[in-house]
Length: 464
Image 1 (cartoon, rainbow, N blue to C red):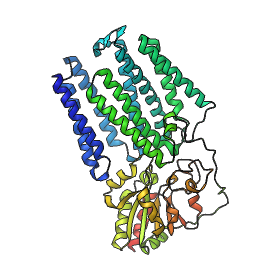
Image 2 (spheres, rainbow, N blue to C red):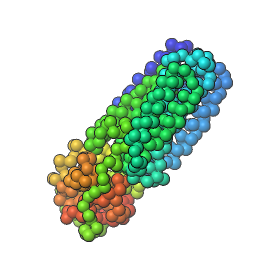
Image 3 (cartoon, helix red, strand yellow):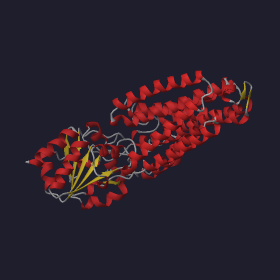
Image 4 (cartoon, rainbow, N blue to C red):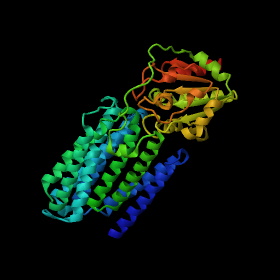
């Protein structure tokens, strides 16, 4: 039975690898999701049928599956796509909490895990337990702070504590010392000291991070949750958890590295926390500048007479659920002989791939959607750039103003199009909390209002 279970766990691990491969491109993402679901189904059934030692354990696992599955089904049906980033952060916190609870259970009932007796837990198990609980506790509180920031329940601005780097370094040193003590002596005091200090460090690492950098934080917490799950797998002796956790941990770290390069951030500073608020707020004074306001009819006239239009979706499109109206607009333009393309910034929508998913939901053809590095050179050839709800990722200050907190972050060069039509509810700042100098450029026309209604009004004007 043990060999069969190990083989099936290996099969599920292979399916998880295929799932990650499939999710790397929109055209294969549905197949990737299917592989992931099949792999998880095999892992769950294997645990229930082959790896559960007694009937009581079977009943408890089924009960847990029923509760967790019911909550998951409810959440999947009720949470809108606009809330997906904070939902992911919330799920990461649960993985971290699970790692802490499993480690505590292993400490107090080691015989149930086959890792020795109380006071005589195997050395390697104590090491695994110490590392797993530290990563899990840090992931738990860090993910909660990320959730609160993304959900607007906590300010998205950096909260900069005095001597925060010294405090964080001191906490890290203490955690390492207590981990060594726990691995050497199996001290319960050391265990709970690691938990408490890691919980505090998770908070202190995330609160200094500003909203513009939150997508990278979510990706990094995803990596942390994976390593926490791998730690649980070692404690439980579960091959599927080890494989899955390692895959999530490594892929999350790789994604974070790619995003850091794309946003001109230091990968080391992400791991250590406290980035995204180091540069003093700056930028030119825009209080006396004027903006050019337009209407749906103005936008329709410009688009109808264009030869090339590039659409730039952002979080505002997601909030307004305007993706279907946007697809209809693109279809109408193409009927009139206008070339239409979509430009996606890597972190548009506060989460990697957020905009791709929304456009796929509206059946936008994959071959019309382009990433930043593939589309940026084409803005200078476009007659119209239609920005719908994207703010920070189009802010020229990131390219031109060395005093800006987002300086160095690659942006979509929409200001290089002949005309930039910018759909936004108001002239307020974006998630990074800074003014967008694009609003005041000569080639920009602001279309103030709800993104969905504005796009629908442009469609009506095109029809006439």
